[in-house]
Length: 227
Ligand SMILES: Nc1nc2c(ncn2[C@@H]2O[C@H](COP(=O)(O)OP(=O)(O)OP(=O)(O)O)[C@@H](O)[C@H]2O)c(=O)[nH]1
Ligand SMILES: [Mg+2]
Image (cartoon, rainbow, N blue to C red; front, top):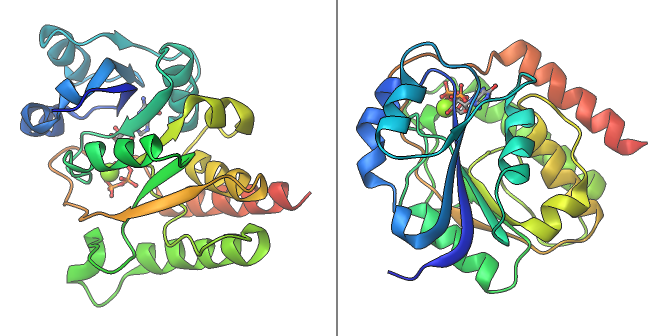
């Protein structure tokens, strides 16, 4: 397997079931460095991952956005790939995302909304989360994108070059970090690419993304980025 000059950053907050189920499927051999950023798990996630020999760091400030920054700060390879071991993300896509950075793209996103993709809600007729995601994505493209349409500006499963990450100077602390990253990359005319991903169902534990505050956070990012 090809090994990329990449840091794989796992993001966890009480994901013990997901970690137990998924860890053995992660292609650790394809990266030079692995780091877990843990948001203060109390279910044994941290201890489990440390027992597997992984380096785990905590966060002094809360939030998934902060975890993205800690992940970048505490690693050193030229490529970063963010992965959440909760069942939603297919570990096989890590290689595809990194290969695209190697081809010269700045940001590679695993998209839940392009031909060949699946998103968690596809099995239902009522899909509020998918609709909200698509609406936010449409607005971001309309306002900021001068390149090819980006179909999923919000999925956190993505890889980015360290140079691009540093250049974006992301400030968001919570879930909307991904939206802020996509919008700022559009504004800077970075090279963005997507691969279709098949989003799996959550393996266990609970969602930390509560729709109303997260939706509100995305709206705030949108307004901030307009200024
Ligand atoms: N380090 C860290 N990780 C977090 C934090 N908040 C969420 N995560 C992790 O980020 C990933 C995504 O969070 P989820 O709660 O699954 O959000 P989601 O995928 O939109 O929601 P579901 O569809 O219900 O899974 C999971 O692996 C979480 O454990 C945080 O504050 N710090
Ligand atoms: Mg999830």
